[in-house]
Each structure stands twice: as C-alpha cells, then as structure tokens.
Length: 326
Image (cartoon, helix red, strand yellow):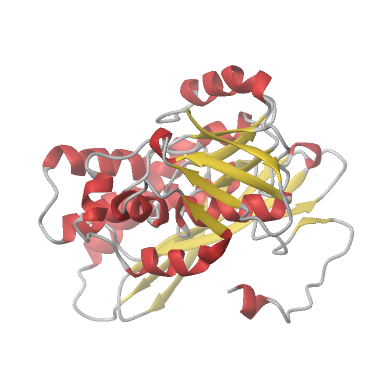
C-alpha cells in the first residue's frame, strides 16, 4: 500500500492536519481554531458466523480509528457488499442492526450508507468524528522515555482461525467476541491524561503498528513480549499453526527493522504478528503519567491497561522495534 500511495499528489492545504503520509488511523481536517473533523472508512469480511455479532464487530472496528486520533465519533454511514442471490434479507438486516447497537453505544448517529453487489459479504462504516485541533493523537509523536500501554489483549486473528477449524471452546469464543465488540472510547480522553501518541492495533498486528509508530516518531520502541496481554490460548494457537495470510504478510512487512529476542519462539512471534480485528490502542505516555492514563483506560471501557514497553532515541542502522523475551 505504501508503494501504491507513493505517487499520489494529495490536494492538501493548511487545514488538512493529518493525511496519509505517516499511515495514521484517520484523516483530520480543521474547520475552525477550535474544531476539526476526523474522517475514516473501514470494512471487513465476516469473522464470526452470527450476522448480528459480525455487525457489532465491524462497527466497533470502524469507529476505533476515530478514537485512536483522540476524537469523538459523530456520524456513520453503512458500507455493505453482498451477493445478489442466496443470502436472505434478514441476514443483512441483522448485520445492520448489530452495527446500529454499537453506534448507539458510541453516541454515533447512523445517517444511511451505500450497498454494492459482491461475491461475498463485506461490511463496515464510514465514520466522521470531531477533535480539537490541539488535541489530536497521532502515531508519529511519541517521545524518548515514553511508556507504552496496550488497552486490549492480542490474538483475535489466531482465535478466529481456530474457530473456523472447530478448535475454539465456548469460553475462548466469548472472550474473543467481547474483545472485538468493545469500543475503544477511552481514546477520546487520552490526550487529557498525558498521551503523546496513539494508534489502534488492527490488520498489521502489534509488530506492524508499533513499527509505524517507531518510524514515524524517529524512535526505537522496545516491547517486553512477556508483558503483552493475550486472549485465552492465543500464543499456543499460533504455535499450532492457527494463523492466516495476514500473519505472514505482517512478518514480511516488518522485515529486518524488527529484532525479536532469541528466546522468543514461533508461537510468541506469531502472536506479535497476528492481525487484529477491532484491536486495542497502543498508547505512548510520559512515565510520570502512566498511572493516570491507566485509570482513564480502565474507567472508560479498556479491557486492560498493560505497560508493555518504552520508547528511546533511535541509533542509525539499528532496528526501530525490539521485542524482548522478558
């Protein structure tokens, strides 16, 4: 995607505060000195069989980009692709109903949308939000000494792969659904709690999104793999081969710019590269404000507020991202 976007000459101007130059989670456009809009769009194929649950997951996944920028979601449009025959209308209705539930939970109005015929079901949202121009959270503004906090466990990709093979028990499935349908609404409050940078951990996995933060900030991020929270059996499932094409492409994407400690096995490396659906926020915050930020996360829907690493100055020629074994 970086190669595809490279030749594009974006029509910018002084009011485009965030474009696609650093692979941020959404675009931001200034309206006034006090107001800016946050714009994003995202859609996915089904990750669970139940259509209503799928709608909830897809909506939470789409809205997350606004929260990752420090914004509040205001308005959503449904984006639905579906096969012209063979799919009952009530299934599509359930998808839209599930999405509507999550939008209502987020306080985000649904104002319509667009449908297109496709070979398989795809669903998501275009979301518009609001943020103060001085309170935007970017993925490229971490500072040396910042502590890294993660707000959801990893492993959705591995658990979805295991579910499709009948390997997932009910407790693990319930944990998976809870993770994917939980809103990252704490993101709108993180700037006030001291956050310097933020990104949501989705398709590129923790390794890919942490690397984007490290490169964009011109720093090295060191993450303690043992401190990274995970869904039930997630690393073990990765070790058993319950991965997807995204895991392999993420490993190719990070390449030699990530150093994995020798003590990390293929199960843990697989988890760190595991593509997430509706994953948590990776937040950078000064060390003296970690406790304050953790409290905000826990009080506003975060499934965890795990300290997983730290940022430091980058040395030329060194990897931008390191995963330690302890």
